[in-house]
Image (cartoon, rainbow, N blue to C red; front, side, top):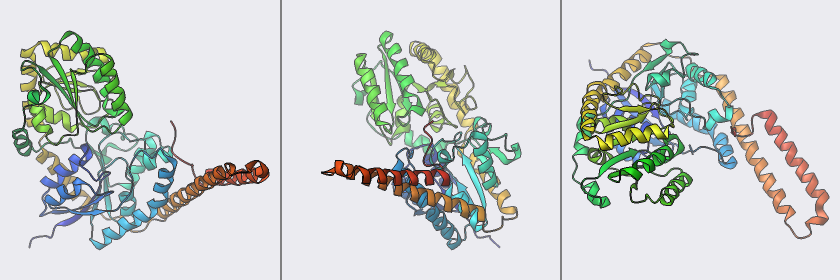
Length: 467
């Protein structure tokens, strides 16, 4: 008799396919054996990821919340105040859909892990990167060891996408608790996308036919190190005018994007550094690049590096997490120290001027990535972890400590919002006509607000760390 598929609930941080975590989830759902595992996905907002996931057989639910950096106090307190309701809503969905296993696909989400403990089912945490210092974890001011201990306590197993990421978790966790499963690419699907018909990039940018294209792909924020790339690009372009730098990615940090453009313009190199913004044809663009540059400060196991290798690009990359595990240094990529502008510029310059070396690196990179990083291998290894969890005895449902944590988060969030409201009202009072005649009342109001602040500080930390 054929078994019915097991319902697995996935939760991720964004509603749009804008980063490596969402790309991972799409590749996983597309290649999952859905005769064995039926995917149910919870997203925090509606975006293009809904349709993409549904196209590949997932049932999708939107339980709304904001997963930004939470540096603005009102957003932060609102997020805390809503957390209890969201955990219980996710737990109710788990019961309704008879979910047997939970997979958290984000470093910033804790709700599904807590809901799994409430319902009494196993949880698996997918670590895409070393701990993200934001959201609930930032409020708790957890150090790396404490973060690892928390995720270990809430999870049957932790799956890290690289040995580097695993090393941030074990120790303190025992190595048996942390499994390493590298990211993989669906090469059949990728090659179809790479061969898609479109405008030639050199023609689109009106560049000479003999231009050497140096491409970087990723969202524009400090983590991705585009400031390092721009500084290196200015050194290269000043002495090798045939080099043109193409940056593909959404500007999630608007200020950084503006600063980079200003820096380029002030150096007179606007004709050599081209910002394309967010594009949906990245495989096709990579296929036209000669050199791929990755200057990230922080990564886990970057998908775009694997894609660039599959596109037969010569690679220059910083030694951030996961990179050294993906290449053979000197044979399929040139590696530099994180943040080293001069070394990055020299490596790119060498490849711009040496076509034969570019060709050799590109050929070796394509062979290496296709031999070692196929998505089917990654998914098969992950489903072995699923089977192990499903065969283990389930945890007991109900967790008073989880209820206590959620109640505390709700109270601190609600109290914080009230303090902000009180402060705003006091500020408005002081601006009223005749406010000087009411200074004594104003001082009393300030004292009351201070009492509320002290109450917040004794209940829990009043907001995210500024460190």
